[in-house]
Image 1 (cartoon, rainbow, N blue to C red):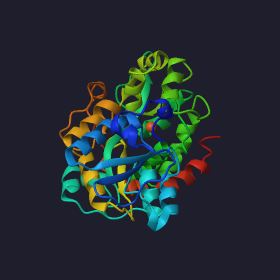
Image 2 (image 1 turned 60 degrees about the horizontal axis):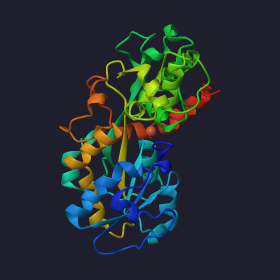
Image 3 (image 1 turned 90 degrees about the horizontal axis):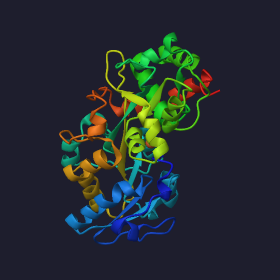
Image 4 (image 1 turned 45 degrees about the vertical axis):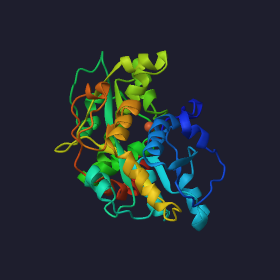
Length: 344
Ligand SMILES: [Fe+2]
């Protein structure tokens, strides 16, 4: 899921005219590409307009928060879907697991996307990066650096808030810990973090900032872009953002945990060439700037400036772990979270 409030945002530009909620799209057609996405329309509309202007290829888009990969699988050989654009390595690897992704070999994508952030077999490509950061109370937490491992330190007893650890953002973090430290150490870490919780896991990342603002806890986990969205959001959310400072945590001996948004070219894409052109376009400098400035994400492509607010969190040092390795440990991560009763 991207953000729970996207349905209330207006559809903009030419994309709006093309958007069909729950409807059917024509399959193969010259100068057309069909996109299925659960990302916010506001994030993509201008970019897709620019793509159409630059290439003459019209973009049809279907938006749905849930079930797009399953829908493509159910549509089978007759699926009009060319490109699936979504967030989280969990959803990208689900597309692979459902057999709806096709391998793509593109020199442009290989040049624009570091190898760590694309499938070695070309079945998914990251478009933007999302750091799992620590939100910390400005008043009560003076630390400016922290390791993920430190969250299990008893010094944080009764002070941590988080959304469910079965949520895909936390599952990816736990999976990364498994890749780095193994299952036994990760289980121990989970037990330690759980022992430090101020309250039962609930809500979303924004609620962590809300809880810190209300004094219910002192630190918690959250993706960096929510801080930009809260800061420039409704007044109550602005207050939550003002109550926290953001620390870019690192794994001991490593860097900050990175998750991705990304794109998949559908296995039965009727407009395959246009699909690849669109994914390539999404890694262009112009498109990458939109991820940084509209959604406060880190561009996947090197050399694109991050938004000044995000830059104020410090310099991002991504953990070097390939995101594809994280995908493989997700099932185990979910088992461990369950085993330690993290959410109970
Ligand atoms: Fe999100």
